[in-house]
Image (tube, rainbow, N blue to C red):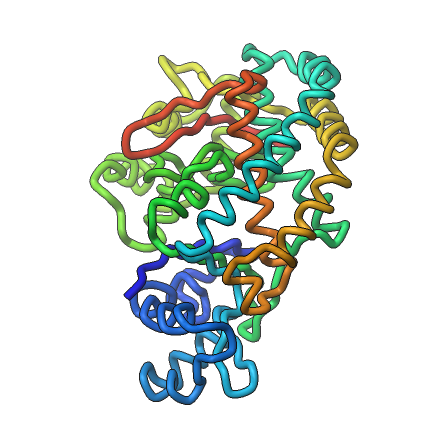
Length: 373
């Protein structure tokens, strides 16, 4: 039996829906590995629906259909979300490598304009560090992502019968795919409200010690020992997982230089402050015009080429999801993440952006704070 890793791009309140049985986090896992193994190992449109119901139970099959993992195609059961198998790895690596290098070349052609814009952001950090956060994260996993969605190049949303809006991406567990799913610089962790965000950006090759992961693990009641001290501080001073109270105090620290001692202690533990001072880049509303301008430069450099590349990849390459007729816009979403993560790796190699630190067991990432007021 194959084993899989499940990734969710949720457009819903994770805290509010944590107990919802229709939340994919509550029904995807070991139990579904066997079903996916059976469907995936057979040629598309040959896995019999009734046989699967007999083998695994009609209720579970229907839950996976309603959840957007599987789809009925006549009498067959097929994949209904992007699923990447070890057989797909060689094709993905080959196709992405050539295209990401070309797209990085296009960025390098416009790097003088990008650097000049970034130099206007005076926050005590180098252009390379700021470009890591702005270009690799805020643009590629933010404004440029939105641009591609608005142009109909990829999907960022899918409404399900449950009323929840999300996309599911599934990878078979194997090293060849792990370098694409977890090994690339394309992963944001953001504890955010309307005022500010405590965030980190990097790869997903480990269990990051950051606020987003901390809150999600508390939600699942599955907190590793390394988070226990932080949990005690949060419970005793904020009444539990109160992100709004915490982030309001972070906003106070940035604006006035003062915050509650408990907040400072948490920020020290998670690496956002050192000796009572913020030690990561802070991006304020005043910086937004420069960040927006960098995004516009990227749209000009890459927009048409990236759109054309994703349309081609999502419809023509020889991978499982394409064979099963999975929505090409959902396939394009994940291929975009692989592409921009590969571009980010190129930008690090070319020293256009700073190289993130690698922390054993956590992966490579940098932290920053972003303010919205």
